[in-house]
Length: 240
Ligand code: UDP
Image (spheres, rainbow, N blue to C red):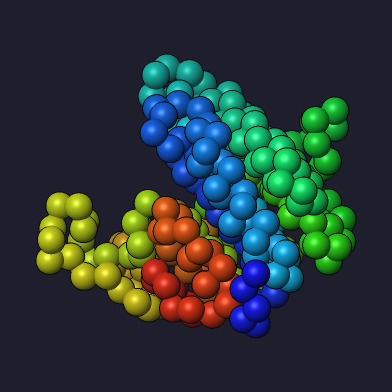
């Protein structure tokens, strides 16, 4: 086990639904799920209190369903329920590894998981339970990025982490432009004024207003999660 001290004692990790796809077009790749669960368990074992928000884009997105003709609010409800499925899958993967995990949902589905109650969530975190926040904010027209920013503020996270497929924020698309430059650090104002699509504006505004630092990193690099929690400068840091 890695004995380096931790820089962050409580974090909020945002995983997109797409992160769970692996090589699939739809659903959850069990190998990817297990790898992510192992990395989360590793930082939890090292003493980091971990809140997780998972998206639902690997199953349903409200905007996509609306584009196909469905009522937007119904589509968003389906999207939120998709995040609950992902959260249950992550809880299962963590428990299979012997970790303690709890799913808390912003929509009431008591037969399936707990409701999100902030004080109870903080208690879970203090007890070292990996706490997975499901169903986004519980409201249509929001994203799980906004939910992640909201939960990060509510639990007093010292850092919000956004795991993506790229190793940070670039000035242009690194897949199209070989000259693209990665930013090591950015202010929230930079993100807004340069229209860098790091997260939606509501999520960025919440992190900025409540001074939550945000790090964007490549989830495909094994061990990076631990290194970041130990304070290494990986990916892009967005700060106030
Ligand atoms: N959603 C919502 N309210 C929320 C969070 C999510 O209505 O507070 C719905 C919305 O339809 C969204 C879907 O859930 O498209 C899945 O979330 P998201 O698109 O953020 O997932 P990700 O892109 O991270 O996989």
